[in-house]
Length: 205
Ligand SMILES: [Zn+2]
Figure 1 (tube, rainbow, N blue to C red):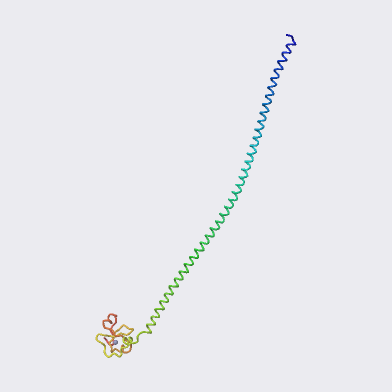
Figure 2: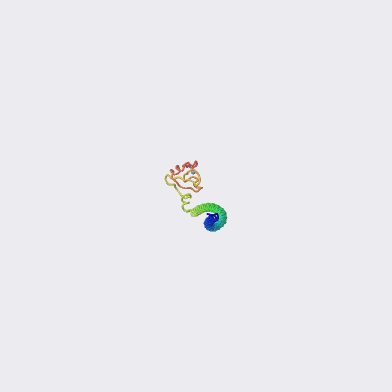
């Protein structure tokens, strides 16, 4: 084999090898491009997801802020309601106190009225008694009075009877000058003794 022949064979071999290597390089390049494409896609997806997530987070944050605002407003309203309720309670307390005072005053007035009524009744009773006394005084039968105390016309005292004055603590005979001078009443000796009357020193009954 000549030198030229060897050179040709080696060249042919190298070309063949190179072609195969080149093919592999191309394959690798293609695969790398595919991988890059996939990576880019993934990156895009990731970015998209991230964006969506960010959006979600923003939405949640916004909702949270709204909630906080609503909560603050609610708190404020609740505070107002509490304040108003406290005021109302105070008012109710005052009203109750006033009612209590009025009730006490009413009770006092009723008490006074009761007292006035009682004293009026007493006055009426007294007046009625007075009127009755006056009536009795005015309508005292004179006939009876004469029978009881004006017995000067009597000629003779019945057996066992003595005489007493309207005022005085002695009893007498019919012919005693006291009986002739003053209004006298005829009673039994027993009645006279029962009434703690003593014998007249003048007529000695
Ligand atoms: Zn006498």
